[in-house]
Image (cartoon, rainbow, N blue to C red; front, side, top):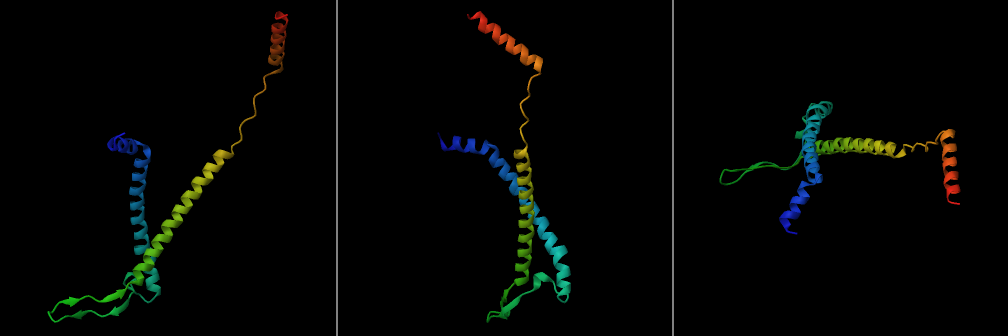
Length: 142
């Protein structure tokens, strides 16, 4: 089978389309979570820490300098505020995914745990008629 045909079969299967939809929704959800962290959660925390903007928290390793040609050389910093915001983003996304997977697993377990209904026993009259039929068949064979 040619590579193009094989790829076409792979792409036409629902898995690739489902994956693409999942990635698109995941990116959009990531933006929502980033906004939640950056715009709603971190400002009050920054206020508690003395009114600082959280994403501007950093340690300066080397100050900004100007070289002989008059060009500005940027400062070297450790941006721990941005790192903490990204960790908060990750924790929120991981928690939401955990809750979603946990819910799906519970629903799957409930579907699997449904007992099968007991076999329906026919009414006594029907059972008696079946026995009579079987006896007649046996007697004809004699």
